[in-house]
Length: 257
Image (cartoon, rainbow, N blue to C red; front, side, top):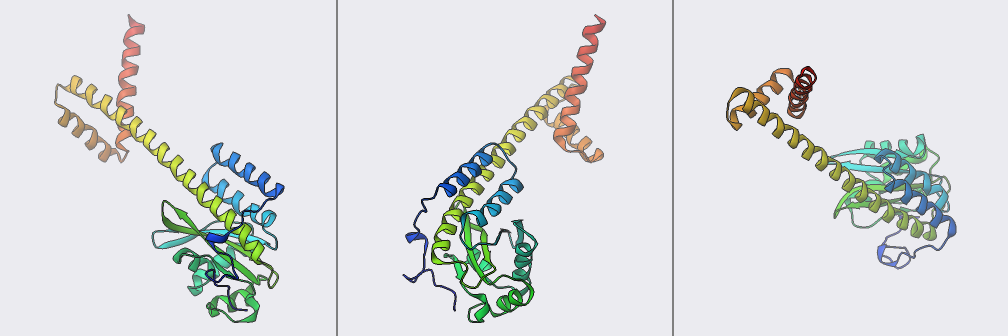
């Protein structure tokens, strides 16, 4: 059977996804959300997302998240070695539902990889020859309007991933995109806080050097920068050492007095 065209009214697409009403799904989403907002690292969140797929999606035996970083692709998480292997096979042959999901607007669904009819002949041949997987769906993951990766679901049974499974998977893929946006926002906030702290330390150090050496701000900053380069240490670390050293001297003078 050829891969289902998401624009065909016989297959699901984003505009017609039916949100599943299922207590198990709601409970899993609640746990995933709690994990995300508790501050779990990105690796743990990605792993939790793929581990949820076999629980939530009927017929799904394994799953993986593939991310695109500039022109390179990597597997961010996989339920098992077979799922990770499929990502490598797809990159090796340069085609497949996961790559197309990242590149194109719609998700890619091949219900039966074993029938040798489809747009990815090299991928299909490799999967059938080297893995037990016989059905696959690739969903694009969006981040701030950019296609940054794919959530990939696999079944070991021909036609194991049905239209209903595709609908549930689409909901999970949407949740995954939201999770990735939250992870990016958290990373940016952390970077901003670290940057502000570094700037404060550099400002303090410049002021101390100006007073100690009776030089201007530019010359004091130049001293910091040259020291950073000579020691091969980040500028913020040198600044922190200058400030810490001055505080130690101040503490010593107070104790002597």
